[in-house]
Image (tube, rainbow, N blue to C red; front, side, top):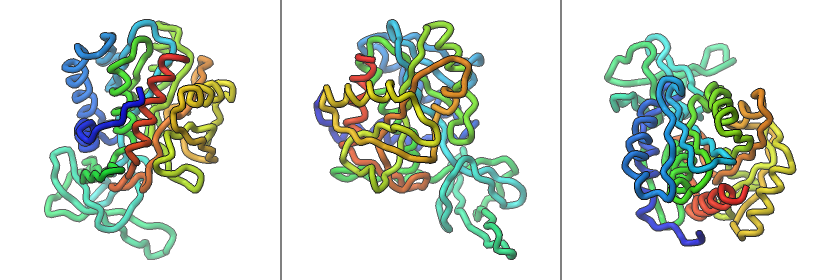
Length: 314
């Protein structure tokens, strides 16, 4: 459980970060995951039941053994939608800067441009390209993978790294559920029915949010996975304390996060009709919601390590 990660371990993460999947259009990630699971599950300790298809829209649920806890990892990303002419509308909350490289689902290039409104009240977003894109075309950041001894960097670490971590945990998981959800970056919409299914069929009532958080003045690179005590919502303290105690017991490097804003799939879990406990547990990244999201490899290792502990012990 404490073995260091090897450089070659990140080939899967690199592939995931390059997949095109703006909120509401997660098909490419769904199909990739279903293919990956079909190929790899023979090597996993426990063969999962797989729930996918129209009743789950583009979401996937894996169920291992007798599950007590569910991991939620969202598949979608931020991006932009072509409005009219060359105008752009944000999908989720991407940070904007002139000249950012974009691609559509056919890998056709464009660049982002910020147009200052004459009144000064707001900025308009436009694309520039030799190609004329039709209304409704969606753009995502153009992926550019970078890796050093200590860091990996690319667009969409949020949340392909959350997916990557869940897949690493799947290899040794005996009892638990892994949920790959949709729409998280743009208001959610899938978690409520996924939670209802897991509650009614498997009596699960606790969740871990496998997502990526921020490097801040209190959460640093290389200091361990972040256990979030609160963001815009507040989880039940007794559940969070269980997680902190297990991290201490197993000597997993971790940091405590306290924020007053931000959110995740946990929002829908807390607002749904069934009483579920939840906690956000994820590696911190710099350059959030840009093409240059950057994560320390040691924090990825501690994230995977803690998830393996929690799925065994909770």
